[in-house]
Length: 289
Image (cartoon, rainbow, N blue to C red):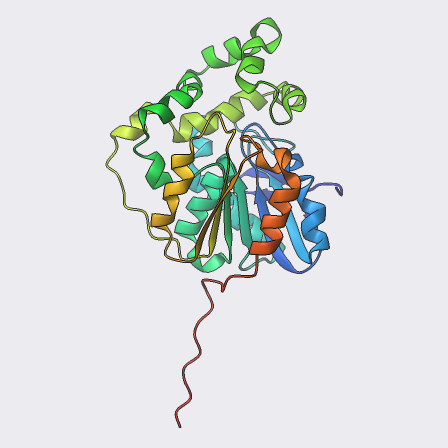
């Protein structure tokens, strides 16, 4: 991967990778990753003829890390992505997201439908499904509640050589790298603030707002070994998509699909992006005889 560049948007410094030429693809990571998550996808997409842009989202990697939870609301982060596209002259990208990046990608699709070509979401399904989770999903998502306690969560996760964090993560993802990244000043609080700003218990008491339909061609990918998110969240997302919808289940992968099954993910991305008719394409009027 090439050296990261930086740009200041919405009062925060964003680091990002920008490689290749062609139709733009923006890759959005989740917790506790950075653009490094996409190291297997970036060269494959560049070789496939795409321009690939992979930011470190606010709070992660080499980007700025505000310490107040209010700085991590979904719309704020979508605005970061929009501002980045404006800075780079990108009008209508393909958007690919994993984990929190997928949640941001869904929200971008709601708010900016005319600035989106294709949508790919990994692991995290449509928020309309997650708004009323099953008891099994609540049990799998227990850590989201644990992360809600400022100061307490940080202390317990770090205690005894990050023992609890290691037990939560297991040997998944870039588990060793996460410890180095989260040891940076302010990094752990910044990462946890994503949950505090968007998945607090109080949020369930707010009146549910209807989500606008997604008209972009959309691909949902879920790994059968995902311990944090159940299949129901992704499999049921199609009912919220008015454009072409495709669901792919990868058997030999867990939550970190880009790392667990890079070849299969790359094949799906290259086979999907640009193949379906884009949502923005207008039908030409019939010529009158």
